[in-house]
Every structure is written in structure tokens, then in C-alpha cells.
Image (spheres, rainbow, N blue to C red):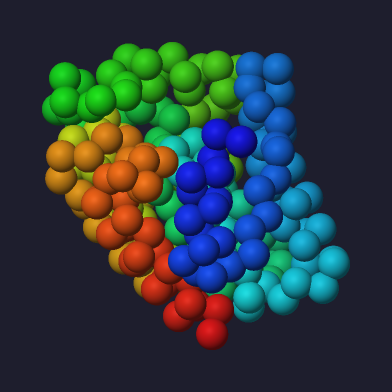
Length: 213
């Protein structure tokens, strides 16, 4: 329900059929429950006859990190990868080492740096914060499909996107990273009345059409 502004816009502009899985959440279900559910959802679509070449996986914030973890898990399992992935302000480093956690501590409209560290502990429990399926920033990234990443220059998670994009490009992945100014974390949720949200969705729609053509 909360993500209708995003899923609805993707369905209209893509145009795309959207499948939004209700995966298990922390703290009741800690890592790796969400990754397991994402894998099950993807495999279910493929088993139902959806070609991976017609699939683009997308997620925002923690869901953006989960999107990237799914790609890593699929690649490591030798399974067919989707045509691409879209990540909106993805959370890729649960070890919380990005400089923007400090630099944007007073700029970010939704979070402050310490809240990210606390949230990581709630999700991880006793798991290692640098586990590649928890923090895709620390994964081997070669062989992943094309990626589109949108993030805000002013959010505490900015460097989660910047550093991931740099590492993915160094591994030979086709990555498009765009940083937007003076917008909050996952501003696409307000795309119906923020011009930057509509502009972001227009670029996402182009990506979807190009990768699934």
C-alpha cells in the first residue's frame, strides 16, 4: 500500500506489469530472511514462465540493497539474471562506513548517520555487516546486469550509491549513477507532485523499455 506511488508510476510509465513481493521484515525476521524471500519470488516468476530477459528488478533504500543482494545471489547460484536493475537510494553498506553519514547528517531530511548504524543492527542480528548478501558493497560484482541508480546528494546514504557504482564499474558492470540535488531520500515516493520525482521516473521508464526490448 505504501509503495503504490512507485509501483503505480512504474506500471503507467514503463509501461510494465509490476510484481511487489511481501517479503519478511526485521526485527521479527532478521537477515537472511529477506534475501531468501527475494530469491523465492524471482524463482517463482521464472517458473511461472516469465523470461529473465523481460524482468527488471527494482528497490529503494533497504529494498535497493536487497535488489543488489538478489543479483549477487543469483549470479553465484549460476541462475539466469534479469535484464537489469533499478536502485533508488540503495542501502549497500550495513557496516556504515560512508563519509556521507557524517557529511550529510544535518542535511538528510529522513535520517541521521547514527540511525543507519542502529537500523543495521536490527536487520543483521549477529550476522557480519560485511556479508556480501547483507552489504552488496562488499560483494564481488563482476557479471551483474546493467544498473540504474538514483540517489540524493544530500542524503546520508549518498556514498552507499557512489561507492557501489564505482566498484561495479571497476568490475565491468554497466552502471548509470545519477545524483540529484535538494531532494530527500527516495523522493520518488512524492513523484505525483515533485518535478524531480517525475523526471526520475521518466529516466527509469526509458531504462525499463531499453533493457526489456
